[in-house]
Image (cartoon, rainbow, N blue to C red):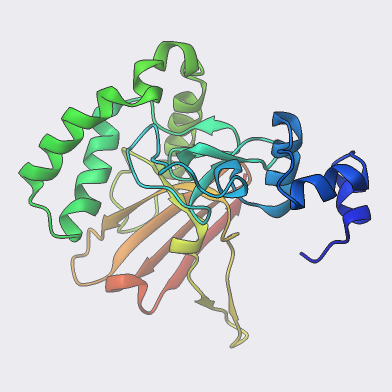
Amino acid sequence: MGLSQDELAEKVFVTRQAVSRWENGDTVPNTETLKLLSRLFNVSINTLLGSPQKLICQCCGMPLDDTIIGRDRDGTPNEHYCQWCYADGTYTYSDMDDLIDVCVRNMVSEGFTEEQARAHLKQTLPTLDYWKRYEELSDGGQFEAFKRQLIEEINALHIEGLPRVDKLNALVGSFVNLEYPLPSGMKAKFLNDQTTYLGNQLESEFGGERCFGVLACMDFILICTYEKDGVNPELVLYKKR
């Protein structure tokens, strides 16, 4: 984003002289201005300050960079959490064991044994800020109630071959935004790469190599099938809520 000093000053409600002092290294923006700059440039405050800290998600322990950082409700990057654990100002995990199960699968795919991954997570997660302050930070079960409502709606669809859905996990759009062939011969994507959805992958009751993918949010429910690594996806259902 190429902005002049005057343009930047106008966007963050300061004078051009203040911007000039930042650029010369004479002063540093105050906390509120740093938040405005963070949202404007879509980077963390840590990055704005030259990355003096090595950030990790305070829910799952994942190393953080600006591409996977969570967002507050107003879109400001929140450098304390990844986008899988914190999306649009909402914490997506309230059960540590559920989070461990999700993280173990990812760590095993990166070369850890299940035993190593589980032991590491059970030791590390209780030391992170979210779990230490869970009673203070949690929403009193509202998000879990929303997930249960989605699960009921998905199971009520009675999709042939789709097993009963029992859990929904946080999934970032860019990792699951498959391109589906349409009857017209065109292809289309239905997700926003930057949005965090709730979903799961389940083996088909019919067997074979195709899996079901389930994705949902406040606005819609999407059911699809695909082969390993998302190959040859087919849209089964897209239903507005």
